[in-house]
Length: 138
Image 1 (cartoon, rainbow, N blue to C red):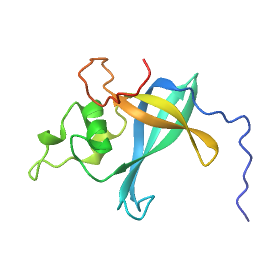
Image 2 (image 1 turned 180 degrees about the horizontal axis):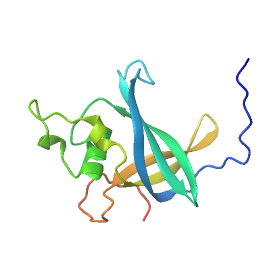
Image 3 (image 1 turned 30 degrees about the vertical axis):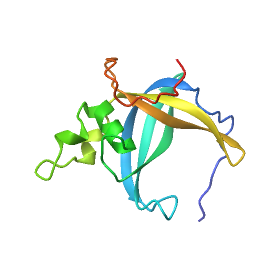
Image 4 (image 1 turned 60 degrees about the vertical axis):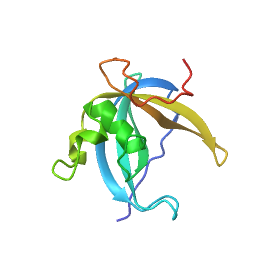
């Protein structure tokens, strides 16, 4: 017996702007570009107008103050990459199911419009300069 698939009708790109989200899983994957090295693929779930949606968010495996992973950790856990070390490594499981604010931005790639996570913010709303991109519209 084959796999039966019903088409998804009426899919729309989620609205650009701030949303409450949570990481629901992650995995190590080959880099999207052979020059990039291995990456992490995070499945991020969020609610838009009562509908649960999911986006994939890729990061390099670099864990530094300026890396995508470092900015995510600061926003979600409130810790800097400098808070970790050989004796206290980051456990990616600590990022799972923690509410966080994300900023979705629309971009066009290969002629198709899509939503990407451009920035991560602490949920408590404190403006501590963590995980902000300078080009986010205000």
